[in-house]
Image (tube, rainbow, N blue to C red; front, side, top):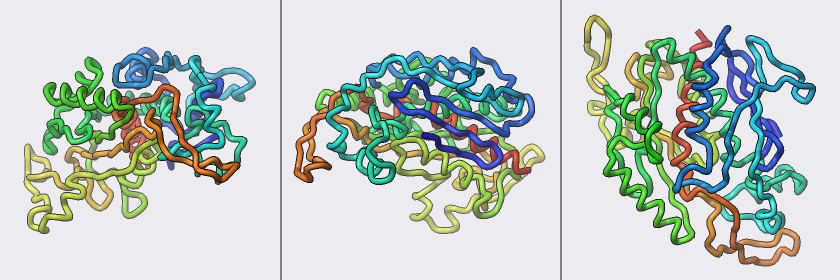
Amino acid sequence: MESTLGKNIKVTIFGGSHEKVIGCTINGFPEKTLDFDHEKLQHFLDLRAPGGSPFATKRKEPDRFEIAADDSFDDICNDRQMTFIIRNTDQRSGDYKTLRNVPRPGHADYTARIRYGDELNMAGGGPFSARMTAPLCIAGGIALQYLEKKGIRIAAHLLSVGDVQDQPFDPMDPDISTASESLNRTFLPVLDTASGKEMADTILSAAAQKDSIGGVIEVAATGIPAGIGGAMYDGLESFLAPIYFGIPAVKGLEFGAGFAASRMKGSENNDAYTVTDGHITTKTNNAGGILGGITNGMPLIARIAFKPTPSIARMQDSVDLQTMQPEKLEIRGRHDPCVAVRAVPIVIAATALGILDAMLDL
């Protein structure tokens, strides 16, 4: 199965969680964008890869990317278009045999069967699996390298896990360096280490109860020039939102003050203008760097909410789709107790892709 995102940049993601390969074909990147640092990209993929954290699935996948250059992938390889693959090496499809006719609550099993029929390989979540974000990170990791050369920096952290809150970014001057260092050094990328320890306890407690927990990721981007985006559906939010919502388990999104703005008065929410070092800036950043869909030169701030992992080991109620009778379901397999943990680099990748795509509208 294939799924395509983007307007000026087209990224087609293909494969499934338990297929032989997953991958992506990228079209429309700026000239020479694909002349990237391979080791740096692989390191970025390693930040998302499963199997190395007590807070993630025990499935071990090296996620080594390859540039496809054989007949199976049409030998697509030039300076504007390229196909990448990642080989799946640690599938255990047997864990999912009993789920073919008994859909997992909270998962796409039932809706996918209604939409695509019962021949779709849904082992491990199939094309709906978080496994499919590995190819997204290839495209986003390349975009990230390109943007960094343009002075645009992007970082993200776990803002919350359950009720545990991390220190939020300063919307006027987000600490990109600390967030980036935390993502590279720790299993739980946070700005405040004490919050990280409390999050760890919360995740491990949920796992011990055969359960899972949700979380929120906050992302920031600095160095974006004013004037990126457009009106209505050409706005930067409109470029970013579809990519964010394509990430499995995402259920909410807000920019700047977000939903908190609905509780403010106009005099509180409006960001007053001023001049700083000869440049137009604002005194606050409730807009999150975007006004009317167009960047205003202030830091971009967004928060993305992830639901709890639907595949949990607790006994749950479901139905048998063949007999149409109630069925008790106990899920086996290897699953993240908190999907938000490994989603931090995924959100960074999505943000880089959306920003670069919008920049190409100019």
